[in-house]
Image (tube, rainbow, N blue to C red; front, side, top):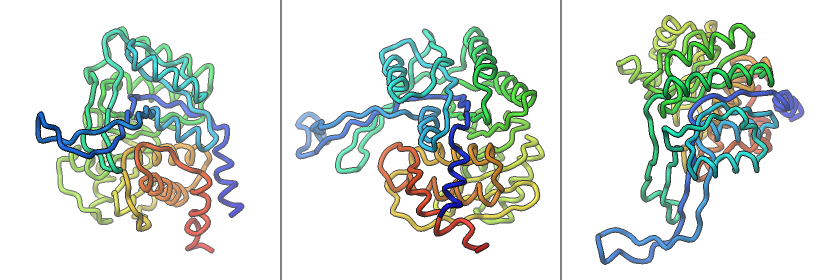
Length: 332
């Protein structure tokens, strides 16, 4: 087990700049005992309200859970929800001095109504249009400041299609990262899928790859290798990681390509699993791990958070316990 502690020990105090869409995941939890007399819908007696960091915020929580140092570069609205989010980051000790405030857009809030661990409804309050020219210039200036002041070990680009990323902004971020020899990892979404060129790790899920390449892709090694090769031809990325839900994940580092199956689990909620995977991969690449180590660690970490309800970060102690039984088992 000491090996795995040493691996996670390498993660500690790594500086991780996280750029992308941030949001609040709001959970309204209650009990249902009757149907409304006004309409055929259940009446939820509210018992608990909980705001959790989502999107780039959840990535920051995962990074912090590993003992690394998250630095957020994002945009929030100048509204009550934006103020609450900043206060929450402050209480958690997460660096937010590079977050930009906008009078043009709302802070994204996803409200889930839950009863007996069952999500009944989700309400999204958000603006998804592109940042204005002025906002993009402010973000770029803050990005340059963040690079100079914090000197990150790795940069994570977390895209949720909420308007933060544009081809122009992506190009600026990746160019400055390359000039400073900082690895860049990406969790993409459809709108900007093929704009993240020259990055170190590109991590879509299978559905996103199918949509972006407009072709049917089976979770089989042949189809996945073809898709990965096509992505590399377009983006010039070093490593492609495709998450496959219950089938695990596929990783192609340009030399070897392999599917890493997942361990059977009692799935409670898949929300936030991608955030955990990209956080693990990013800290792993910053720590010099091999493709095999990256794949196994990310697979286990992503699977574990799916066993817990809601958007939650990784639990390093639980991860170490499971890795002690899986990582390098085929070598030792």
